[in-house]
Every structure is written in structure tokens, then in C-alpha cells.
Image (cartoon, helix red, strand yellow):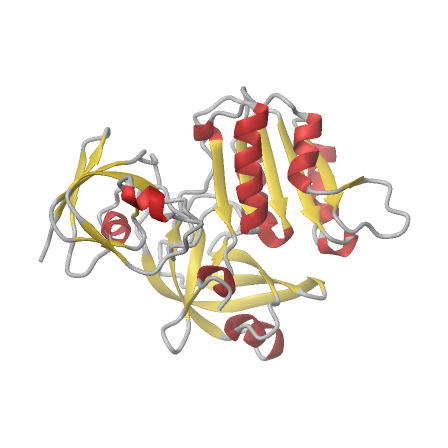
Length: 342
């Protein structure tokens, strides 16, 4: 049975269809709600239910606690309406601007900048007008219907008819074992996208802090490319955290961008530094706090492991005066993260 959903304070109205979640219906109707993993693991889509009733699917308590649910909060990615509903949620201009498409893609190139990282360039069909915002992601649809999400590492202008993806090998992972063991150039994969509300807010003027861990660098790279392309003069600093120096798999690319573009600075941070490493060490978000104890006038774009993203969000807001609404994040949730370690 369809239900009418009203989003306040924006006043947007849309209708669910069948067994839609609140978020799935919003995406289908081009309504830009905030979200990340779509699997009840990250909490990015948390909103307040003002009127109506919903039933939640499985989700993690770190994304929505029992206390929050009792207080009327819902995760739009796994909440199915039982009645017409009114939600209090911030809308994201541009998030629903481009249509979500299902389409075949062909592996054009594969490189290994690190032993456990593959960079894939995927060729899109010539007759598909696939559009996206720098920082968004796509989902690969596997043969058994399972899905795996990867952020696009290029800005829309930089690879005409292609997208770039950074994939870290997760031993035992259904998809990454295939990528690192059997996938070859010219193979065809099915994908759907674009998804996600993590992308550059181009109408803002505040200085930008980019925060990445591991292959969370992928959408950050896209944002850097986009910012250069539009000629932005906003000061921007990238803090990229990893365990070892080899994990900073495109560090030379970043260093070159910073050398060519005076508004960009680069701070690599290692948590388990190699012998002879002369750079910063420790937790990457703490390096930001050491350098920028007052973030009240900044925007932050953070992407990486859930623990890094959550720690940065909590500490930047509580200790560095970052406005909560200026923290934009995409937590890279693995299948284990999504299922609480299962």
C-alpha cells in the first residue's frame, strides 16, 4: 500500500511504493535525503519521525540505539512506513538531481598501486548518459543479487565515459577475491548508481579539511579534482591516514597536486610508521585537531573506516567547535561492518 511521506522543514512530499523503505522511495523520487551505507550500519540517514509509524529492518545499535528509537528517531534506509509519515530531515540539494541507472560496465584498465589495492577504470556504455557528483558511489550487482559499493575516484569531467574505482582486497571477500584473483580487462560487470549524499558543497566558501583513511581516499580524490576544475580558491588541506607508507598508494599524485595548486596542502599520517619515516604519526583525526584546534569556520569531508569517521565527527564537534552540519562523511562499511562482524 502506498504511503505519503512529507519532509520538513523543506516541505517535500513523495510517495512510497510497495515495500519501499523511506530512503529507497526518496531516491526513486529524486528527493535528496542524507545517507551513506544504505544498510543500517553508519547512521548517516538518521532522522526524526514527527508523525506516523514505521517498522525497522535489521540495523546496528551504533547507528540507531534503542534510546534514540524510543525518542522517535529512525534510519530511513531500513525503516518501512506503516502509515503516512512526516519526517524532520535536512534535505541535500543536488543529491537526487541525477537519475539512478542500472547499466553494464567493462573493465578498461587494472593497476596495482599497492599489493592490496586495485585501481579499476570502468568503461561505460556509449549510449548511457551516466551523471554523478564528485564523491558519490556506485553499487556492483553480483550474480547472486548481492551488492558491493565503491566510491568513484574521479570527478565527472576527468574521465569521459569512464569511472575510476579503488578497491582494497579483503581476503575471503566475495567480490574482492574475484577482483584480485580472476577479474581481467574487458570483463563486464553490472552496476547501479549514482548513490550517496557525500559530495562537495560548491556554493560554500569556508576552508575545507579533507580527511581520509585507506581507500577512503577515493572520493576525496574526486573532490580534489572537482575543486581544481571549477577554479575554487578555498583553502584545502588533506590529511590522509594509513598504517604504513605503502598504504598511501597515490601519495605522489597528491604531492603533485599540492605542488601545482597553492590552495591545497597535504599531510600524510602513519599509525604504524616505517623505519625512517619523518612525517606525522598517530591517529589521523588527532593530527587535524593538533593543527586546527578551532574548526568553527571550516567544512570537513571525511571518508574511511567507521571508527575513524565516528571519532572525527565526535571530537571535532565536541572539542574543536566544528558546526555539526559542516561535517560531511562517508564511512566505508564492509560486509562485516554491516552485519556487526558477521
